[in-house]
Length: 249
View (cartoon, rainbow, N blue to C red):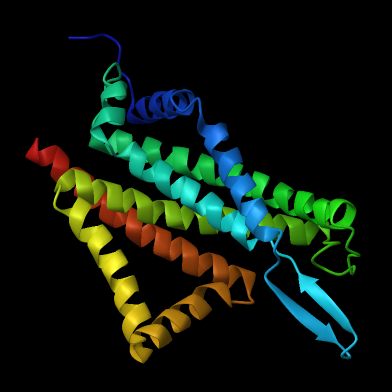
């Protein structure tokens, strides 16, 4: 019997630190996604005419954030793979401590992704202004206050973290039963193709309402609440899967 007792929080902390070190190419993947998102953003997201004489190109960091979300989504899935989890063997651990250390890691990754996404937005504006020689109309989007930057940063973290929860749940489902590795892609790819071919109005309206419910919320606290509750649901479901996997073993 060991005289040294290690608390659950200490185990979670050790695993969390180890996982930060276990992803040496974490930033390389992020920077690649940011560059891809930046290239997509250079085309603008639309045009707007002013008095029929001036055309204004609209630039946004939406593509940059989307590719950052894809980055965390992939990392979340990778965290659940057996190949990765075998690297945690040197630590005393179980499914629960692995779950909480994974969640902390994904929250950290979301914060890092949010920082570089917002910085990339200013890089986008610099490229548009100095390399593409476009004049920039000053406004809230180009000259935000400190408070707006802070709220934007928090909102971006919450959004990325929520999508990482979805990726983490998908990865855990696949580890629970390999059948899901075929079912989940078939549902999304097949559903998308059917939507494109048939143009089902009910599905399109449902998707539009869902998108509007989350992303058109003007009140920041309601926006944060919606995403955090959604992330909590996905993580709670994943936690239950983790417990069942531990019992099964």
